[in-house]
Image (cartoon, rainbow, N blue to C red; front, side, top):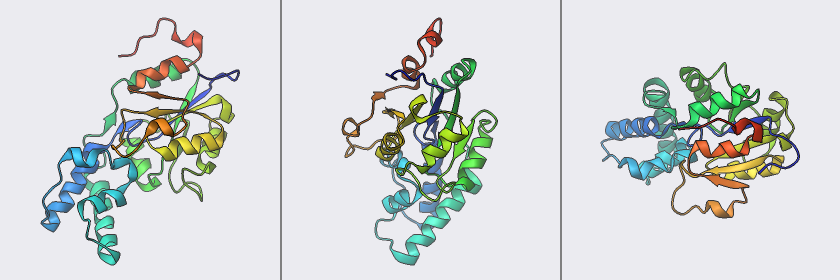
Length: 231
């Protein structure tokens, strides 16, 4: 739990933490496989790779692709995703909307720090009607360094007008926890996110882990929890 500094800001990773983007990422990958005449992978084989980004998904679907062919496939995947699948079935994880409402009602703020590039992040955030609610949206190319470097987190804290010790960062990848720890924020692992079997979240050094977004509630100021139930 946070120490003497009360929380003022909650920051979220995007894919696999704030929003369930896996159905649309999978749809774009499946479309690419159809174009290439390659058998489609099952959704279960793809979901927990989404947080690793588009390149990881293309490698998963086309393990023999290298060099120029790999780059062509990667670019085509991103084009399909951006133009046809960006926000078809993507939505906030269950319980997240109520959590965001609670944060806002308490006079706290929240934002997004993702490694997704801005040309994908910004239209997705707008399509989800979150662009006027998030106090900060930091993408993978907003700063010269990406997570796990602390630079994106430091900028997010600055834009949210909070000190790192007043911030809680929630993510589903080890780089999220590394970035938060390097910045000095509190950190939580979103176990409901895209975490594959070889990963070991218990070893990442986070301050805690949650199975559902509503489990963030006890981390908010004590007075905020009176009379609040998240479903």
